[in-house]
Length: 560
Image 1 (tube, rainbow, N blue to C red):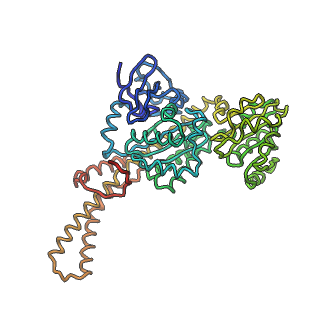
Image 2 (cartoon, one colour):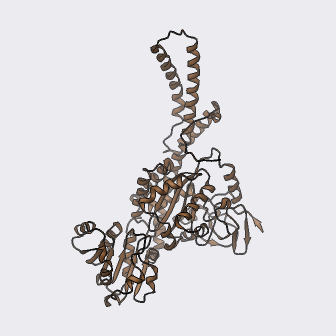
Image 3 (cartoon, one colour):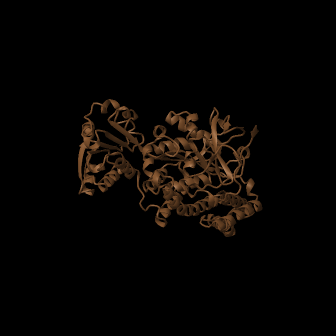
């Protein structure tokens, strides 16, 4: 039986499906339009209010974490209100069917409809670290990635957020379905992962859903550890790097600025950060859980790397009673800084060349470096001296790096235990109810900031009209001035001609002042923005600006 199914604007692994085949217990999408995937993908449905989200079981993992009900068949509940939805992941439902949305996208591809803001990503909620590490991009490479993405035919702006827990691409696309195709193909080419495998895990959000996602990320609501502060600093860094690259653009600049504002407000106006922990502190908690009685205070501790994450490791290890630790790092200065900051702890520096020797003398090893290849392998760890009996003769590696610093094959060694960032879920699993309660207060702030951003973005629609109106007025002014000059004596002085020029410009500027004032809006008030949009449409009708040819600075996309 064939039918078209209504979907939310989430495109989790779906994007644009023209037809689906219903079977008992599943939905199969034979193909993704525009070549997003060449083979069928088994899909499931998550009910959100009065609409449904379709996606692969893995791709819907993040939605399921929010407490939404996954179903295989049956009609959506029409009586569910927005307030009944879990506050940690409330997303507005859309009423368009997949076929209608696909048709609209085709019809509007090159019309005046404003471009879509989209996010395509993989996070700790949906994707194992084995795949995330293949996509991870160091901060120094973000500008290159932005340039490559924004040079795609249907992508106007691009930004990259790459952390140990997530890899997300934010784009402004003139055609959202073709933009999805271009981004997924770029991700596949960059990582070596096939598009089909990517679509098993990727989530795709557009417009207000994409905005809400970034605001939740910035606020710490989408983090493994609710309210953790490091993600806000990472979002700020995306903006800082992006502002130095032309492909980041005005829309993403506004989006990330508003996301930072939302993140700050959530942390200052709610208690979401009260008792919040970071990835580093969760790693220390995991160590306490896995070690014998006495925890980190009795074992020999080694930290590989001396960056921000390692600094937090030192801080939380000290809070758990560990006062002696060794730090292996390429340079000594950062370790000296840590010794100065934590004078009560005995922090010993060793160069990177001594890493394996220090590992053989340690029971607990934390790794947090930017190395793109494993530092510890089965071959270089197996010959090491066994761990002390204080840790039960077992050496624990806790790797919070992405890409991973510790090869997974170390788990094959009987006296070795290996944990990565995905294993931190065990630490935070106990406080789910508290997470949902705190997230409810934060969501109110996020909703308000979304409205502010949408109003600001709507206000940008008047910019082309302002330019076209000025262009139209300037053309009329020049034509009338030339006509007047042709009727005057030829011996007019340069000063007299300049006076006539200034007179014509002054008259035009005076006449345009009123209309221009009614076309300008800072986007802070949604009611004012609505009035401004109405004024824009009225002026376009009155001066026939729809047919006005406007030469503006645009990207050379090479469209055919």
